[in-house]
Each structure stands twice: as structure tokens, then as C-alpha cells.
Image (cartoon, rainbow, N blue to C red):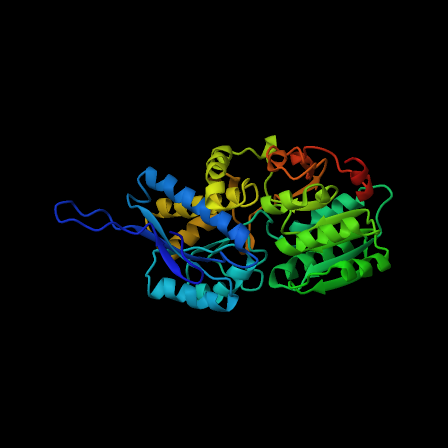
Length: 416
């Protein structure tokens, strides 16, 4: 049974000992917090499934250092409670290792305690979490590289600057939330870098239900580009509003957390056509790193029963790679000393299902590998059309591309 909201579970629970059986090695306990309810729930539940797949894989090979692995996992969606959870994991549960949960909203509030306790800490997809702290024992499982704010958003503006006629203006629209602040800073910097003027900027609360006034204001600005930084539910509402609106920017998308999610894709279907957005992995030949297809096969076999996103393209490779980094550091240093694990991670190259990963400044990847994809030819709402990458075309960077950008946005709609 999975933990109920706001509660902790140890998975799996150890069997009762028997006096006539030799004592099994004590399990290695890895503690962390995931927001399995609320706005982060869909992606967090996918991460949970991937972590369980990794745990089963490593235990089937004899565990780590000859000991089985189990998780001590809390479900917590309130960022204010995260520090106390990590304090309990360390002081009450006495876990051997702590890892980061999914997203900036979970990772950032954990960091002060992690810094205080000098723990080795590998986070999952937090953007720019260590920009200000510069904590040397933090490592980011996100392919945005040493300048994450810029890398997440640069592809959108670089693509725009290559088009004819060249877009000259942009409107920036973002959720009023912690996760969106760094991408918006990066978008402003990249707009300036590529000579694109910001003519409109707005934020909206995550509770917003009617986005017509938001897009009305963008339309009045007459901007060529519409850059969005949204979460899952608001991505759905924004896509519907934009498609039904008379306003047609030349490019739309950018930093939406939502179109990567299977449920969002199938819910929106053809309403996604023409949107250009970031991705971290896509099922194209140049991204088929060793082990990634086997992982996705296992994930997709289990995803329906687990009630999570059916494809796993966004979450599975990075969540599995997160645990591969932890495991390789433990085995290389032969233990759980945080200073030793961190020193090793700062110097090593880790073979993972995301390819070789090497960490650089601030614990970010030494080189960025952010993709830009455009949805093209989506028809209906069937999930299978997204399985092989034929509907989410990688349009940047050139070395990973699987097709060409349709420009402007309106042309992608006529191609349906």
C-alpha cells in the first residue's frame, strides 16, 4: 500500500525475523519527500513509480553494497512542511541517504536543512535551486546545464530569431509561483540576447480558471511571440483559450510544464498543434541511450495499474538516472559518507539512461541538453500517437532534431 497524503511509508516493510533463519543484512534506507497530491501530483506519482522500478532492479542484483534498498517516503504538497519532513527523515528515521523530490517547490525549502547538515543531495528537476546557495554537495538531475535559467528558454528564442519574417516582440505570461520565477528571468535575458522586445508581462494565480482576460491583454499588445510558463492544469486552460481566441502569435509555448504529461496530451489532443515547448527527452534515435528503452518498456507495462502517466517520456529517464547517480556514488565510495559521496560526484562521469552525466558549477550538468519540440499533426486524443515521437517533433538543437519547425503558429493549424 502506498502512503496516504501527509504520511510516511517505508517500502517495502521488512519481514518478521525468525530465530531459525540467519539475520538478513539491514536494508539501506533512502528518505525523501514527494508531493503526491496537489498540482505536482501527476509528475510526482510518475517519479515514485520509476523509483520503485529502480529499487526492484537494484535489489534483484543484490542491492547496494550487498544490502537491500528501501525508501522512506513522505507525501507532502505544502512547501512549509518540507524542512520538518527532512529533519524527521534524518533525526527520527535515521536514513542512510536523503534525495530530493520532484520540482523546485519541494527542493528549495529542503535546502537550508540539507546545507546545515552537510548532506549529499541529488534533486530531481528543480530549476536553479542552488543558484544563490552555491552549496557544494547539491547535484541537479535536470539537463539545463550551468546556466539553467537561460538554457531552459534559449531554444525558444533562438528558433524564433531564425524565422522569416523575424519576430520582434514577445509577451511573457507566467504562473505566480516559485517554479516560474527562474524561467521568466531566463526568458527576459534571452529575449534581450536575440533582440526581441518584451512588450507585455503578466502573472496569474494558480487558482485562475478564466484565462480569456489574460489572452485578451496579450492580444492588445500585438506581440509576435507568446512565451508561457505554466503548470499542468493551467497549461490545459491556456491552450484551450489560445486556440479559441482570435489572436494568433507567430510562436507560442516556451516553458509550459504540462504538454510533456501524458494526461495533458490526451486531454488536449489537436489543441496542442503548433505549440513549441521544452523537453528533456524524446523518443528520437539520437536520444536512445543504453537502457532507456528497457526502462520505458517496464514503466509502460506498470503505468496503467499504478494510475500514472502512460508514456513516461518526461519523468522516467531523469528519475531513474537520479537513482543511478546515487547508486554509483555509493558503490564507488563504499559507503554513505556525505563528504565522500559529494567529492566523488563532483569529479565523476555517470553512465545513465540519460546518457553520460557530468556535474559542473552549482551541481548542474556541465553541458545543457534541453530540447525544443513542436506538436504537429496531432489528431484525436488517443495516447498511442505520442509513443514514437511522430507528433512531438524535435526542432532544436540541430544535433537532436527529428523534423522542421512549422512557422508561423497559424500554419501548423492549417496542417491538421
